[in-house]
Length: 164
Image (cartoon, rainbow, N blue to C red; front, side):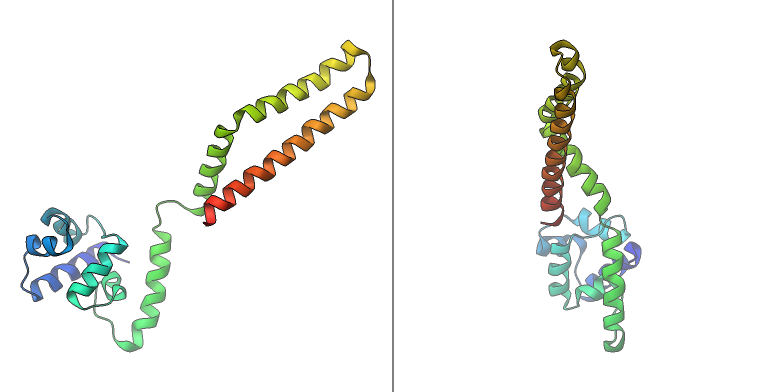
């Protein structure tokens, strides 16, 4: 997907329909500066705008993304290429979004991690104070189970937000 090619295609369609940038902008609900930015290849219209532009000029979104008229034989191939190009140009990759939601969950649940840290410290210190060796085995196990449970909750939260 080539922004400049798409922009030039929008400009040529606009000129074919004898529209100024201002007139097209009014029809689409944007400013003439926005239309100019699209046509110069500085910005790409969002998907809602692609829908409006395609209706306005009676072309497919696939043709807009390709920046050219497409024959019936090439239509499917160009559609596949455009889908791949659009998915690659997504603002955030899946890994970046996953890292973001993990960080957000941890920030919202910091008190739980502090509590788990306190339990671990207690597991080391309390057996010496109480003189009870069984506590030395039980407390780390409790902390580990708590950590696993919280990690599961975090991953469920991340997956829910990532894929919904």
